Length: 295
Image (spheres, one colour):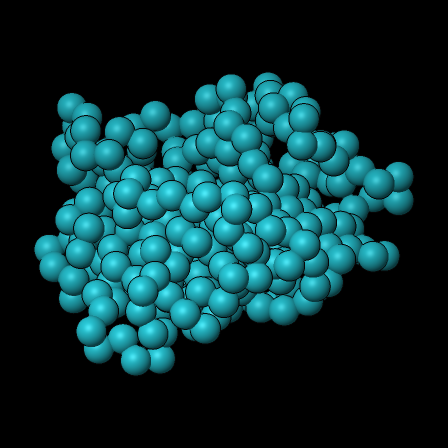
């Protein structure tokens, strides 16, 4: 990977580094006339420098629209717990998503609890300023038996009623809104009351470890849990993996092979549809994306 060969000494000036990113100069190249430069290599180095500057030079770095924090989970139902806050209002790219999430939103004077289903294509989302979000990202295969996953597909979100006491109403029960630390306790209560279930076939099938059942049976399992076909979920997982590699500064050629695409044209079509822009733009612009942790 490109990062392995790069080193950014702390004596570098933050303003000088910003000059590299904004085009005042590059690693031995003129940013506005790069005919003699390896542009792919320059883009990869620029992406790594972007990450370095965000970490080392917060006083001069323009903050991202959304700042994320996430952690793994010990629950067999949960893949990740994440939270974020918005520094300002604006728009961001919401990537295609194979997992179901429960999202808790707090904006000034407003609280919401939303059950979000899988999404089959990228969309542009408007983000309010000074917002806070907590989300429980369920593992592939976790689903809600009383709700058809297909009915949650593509932003057909289920907004749950907020009660006067600050709790919310779901599945004929009153629930306390969890926090970043106790999300697993909340999920355990969901499981104990039969509100959620998990089909272990799904993760294995998505990873290519086809269980001992017919392809038609596997498709039925995947459709029940996600509302999508197996190939649809696999395409999303691969595109998100490719986007994570591009955000790290990997070259388009390396990502094509690492993510298992037939060629660069195949990568471009998939990433543009499922992530929201071409691989070249992802590498060059380092845009704000929805939550992603996979590499």
